[in-house]
Length: 340
Image 1 (tube, rainbow, N blue to C red):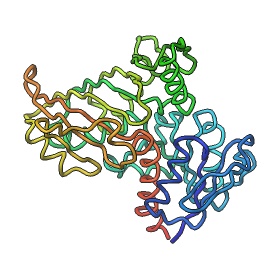
Image 2 (tube, rainbow, N blue to C red):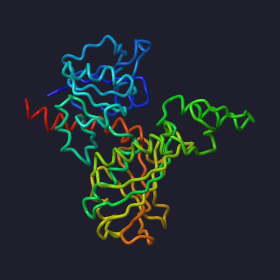
Image 3 (cartoon, rainbow, N blue to C red):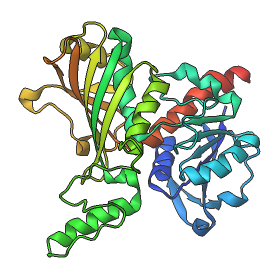
């Protein structure tokens, strides 16, 4: 059985990665349509060895489309995702717009695949924030083993999470510094080259940023509402790949050695943890990979049942495009084929 798939936002970083992953994973698509705004009509994007011409989202009728993969921002999703859903497409949305809607499941297939059945309420499934996706892949098997009480996470997020303009700003500022040009922030609030910025998304009334709030509420929705989580989200001068330092406190005993064993057997995770031989993964090493990499697993001696770990993943893949395609695979495998 083949599916008709529309990729909305096909000219952006994540949209192009969706097309790459649909091809790489041999998603059973009989037709793939690249959609974007009218100003992008006629542009060409790659799908394997094929070239797709971009069509206008505003003029597209989703009738007969099985999946609509959205990655064009919250404003576009708010307007067009319900239209696509009403016309019969199963929408998988990468923006934050629907994530906390109680009638829209928020899915990471390795973590809560059973919740995907709820897509029938609105014909929409939400993809979590990039920093949340890799976090919950690491947390879920440990939560099942020992029950997580509290998580303290600090993120080291690449510029690609803020789009093409952000990556260009890092490149331009870095190049300019070598010729004594004064960096001029535009996409970011402060200089990003040779710097780190503890500010992603807007500040809220409690002085946390919205990115930090997303990690808290999304983790609760995906894994367990009882988990307490606090986050500090930081933008760093890398192009692709998010890293996270995660401290976890458990209800029950769980040693670092046992955690390492559990994570090695968990879906979507690759454990690389041999510090004596530099056996840990950095952002540049995870680019282009499907896995969420876990390193530096160690006991936290300051609390009774606690461990620390280091988590790295390609944010354009597991944090966005890959997770979206995995959701489509899950729905196609578990629900659509059963109904056929």
